[in-house]
Image 1 (tube, rainbow, N blue to C red):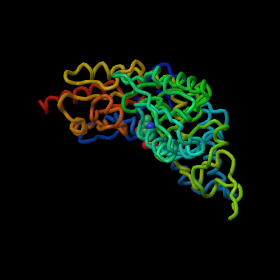
Image 2: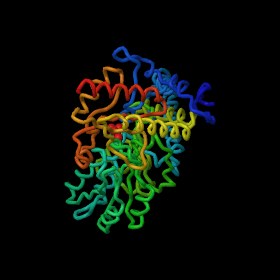
Image 3: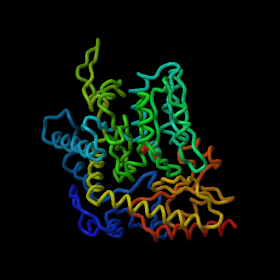
Image 4: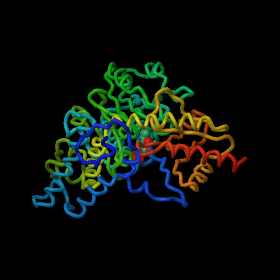
Amino acid sequence: MAALEKIVIGEKRVVTAWDVERIREDFPVLKQTVNGKPLVYLDNAASSQVPQVVIDRGSVYLEQEHSNIHRGVHYLSQRATTAYEGAREKVKRFINAREAKECIFVRGCTEGINLVMHGYGRKFVGEGDEVIISAMEHHSNIVPWQMLCEEKGARLRVIPINDAGELLLDEYDALLNERTKIVAVVHISNALGTVNPIKEIIARAHKQGVPVLIDGAQSAPHLAVDVQDLDCDFYVFSGHKMFAPTGSGVVYGKAEWLEKMNPFQGGGDMIRTVAFEKTTYAGLPNKFEAGTPAIASQIGLGAAIDYLESIGREQAVRYEHELLRYATEKISAIEGVRIIGTAREKASVLSFVIDEIHPHDIGTILDQEGIAVRAGHHCAQPVMKRLNVPATARASFAFYNTKQEIDTLAHAIERVIEVFA
Ligand SMILES: Cc1ncc(COP(=O)(O)O)c(C=O)c1O
């Protein structure tokens, strides 16, 4: 079993059973105690943890390669450039992009969506046009589009959801029309865990000639993603939610769109020639990477991809699915607990409320037990409003979590209820 063996970066192994204890050894942060209790880290949807091999790769860059990329002819700069561009090749393979130049490095999903809003939206969306999002979007896939619509006199349209937290596809069909200029939807909702039928959503938009952006912040870490098979026009994700450092992230875009789009930011590295009269821009991907990027972080993202591939991605996904099933059964059986988000297709997120107890109080008491969950609106206020809750407590899982940790969570929730009884 790969999970029992020493994990070698880049080497693919076949996992026949998930040895979670072996996997946990790879994550130093998990070994600590919090408030005298073993840390139970269930806030993976906010940021996941980083394996030692990724930390080590960052150290190699800082200790042996630290220098600026692209512009230098010297040894260190060439090494750093090779590592940085190597990470791009890994991203290409990971999401099955046609070409590495279709993978633009950004600081994270938020910056990526803003890049598409500026590059595509400000060029192709005009007065009276429409932008479609869904009712379960993270603020980072709402606010940029709202800003665009305000600037252009365009209209934001919203695909509604049912009480389980599933998109109403008939309503989506009714929204699509000749004024629609882009559809931007989340793959997996960070607030509810709903997995949206994005292939279908993309196909329906394409029938009308409308490009689609997928917010992959929660799917890149928890599902196998093939952008060519999905046929999405843009797919955006953050490294820090997929076992890489903060400051890393990717916008995948079809080359034909990226070529037509305006640059996002101006500055060094994104130009071909600069003169006061006129500047011409570099080709892909540099056109969208102005200034010195987060070199160490993006190299770390490449290492995280190697790590994910080495442990067996399919098995990891299957294991996380089983964890979510187990957690849903355990937590929903506790009297007074209500699960928010009961879609048929879900992944890695369990949001819940407890009668008469504010989620912040739940989070605070769980923290005393060493359990990290998130409490609040999860940067998705509109979906909270739609489901008539001001906030939820959210446990979110990764392949290093265990069923024992879920048992610990369940006992701690019972304690919360006792405290407030
Ligand atoms: C679905 C979704 N989209 C976008 C984001 C924004 O990601 P970031 O803060 O890394 O830019 C998040 C972060 O929680 C998310 O869950």
